[in-house]
Length: 442
Ligand SMILES: Nc1ncnc2c1ncn2[C@@H]1O[C@H](COP(=O)(O)OP(=O)(O)OP(=O)(O)O)[C@@H](O)[C@H]1O
View (tube, rainbow, N blue to C red):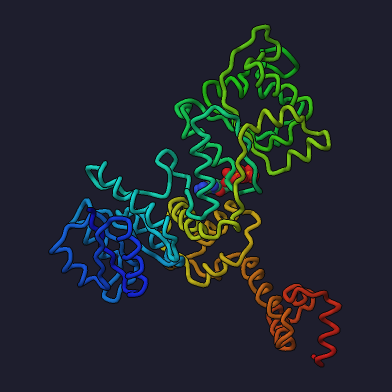
């Protein structure tokens, strides 16, 4: 039977976890601190070690380093609280096999155990696992339920030749998903051609898609290869596909059905073998109902659909993405910012992120540039992040009708007595604010 060591100072929790894992045919030892774990290491050889990040006599990261030196092959899984996820990500770079954030469900624990033990059986040397896919280092997989479903769908559909329609709000990562589908497909060594349909004027769209011969129209000063031909053998990604004119939709449908294209001014047809992936942040079905988007094309594009979740709907991933964008910004700006202050993480959690991952990435890049110390502080964030928070806290409290007078005073102070801004913060109209100020003699 495989032997697992659990290092966790919460006695109730560790005993509960021990019992659960033992029920699945593993031998489990528990230590409540690092010194106890060191004694156990001397006596036993473990197949897997679970350790808490914070222990009474040290931290899980230094323990991880020690284990990696002494018991090279033993996988180590860190158990973290939500706020420590970014530290755990750092730990993975130092050789932790995985991390699991509390509270976790039993199936998650079993999955991590299976993965770790399976990995150990197959690997001859330890791997530094990463939350990015091997094929694409710019893709963070995410740990939220919504992200897990997204990843599963990508894995499932990538190796097929099905056309995929990716939907989701702006900045959620639709293009990144499309690229990932390509990189996980059999076409990964062939081109991935991304076209923004919203940026192509309809008059030149067919030349852009199918190419043209020199002299075939005014301005065609040389032969041009179209996107279909450039993507031959690979994947053609059409972003903002809802923006195609009706005429362009017909041309696209024909090319997809016949798998042949004819450049403008040419008499020869070219066979094309492309996998089509499209994206939109509009509701194409509404377009179909209104008659602006062809229903036959819609079904042709939508052999499989993937909805990329809003950042707000994958709260559990926020720190992971923040950490990823911070690393990226550090590299781009040649900085060495280590992390985020607690206050910043709270502001991040409370903000709605209407611009999704793109907005998060931009906010972090700007803040990284403005930061001279180790941690990004709230003062380096755009005002809108704290405004939403103030407004949320104030308006939430306000609706309870308690301390109404104090809340009004606080809002007026925060906004330098600007009634319009104060009313906004309190989520009431200016008129209501004036009435209440009169009532409270302010
Ligand atoms: N899974 C991910 N891992 C890391 N970075 C990501 C991920 N998804 C998106 N991003 C980053 O977020 C930003 C927005 O992604 P992307 O351009 O793919 O969004 P989009 O949904 O296609 O946006 P739009 O609708 O405006 O075209 C990019 O900087 C991208 O690199």
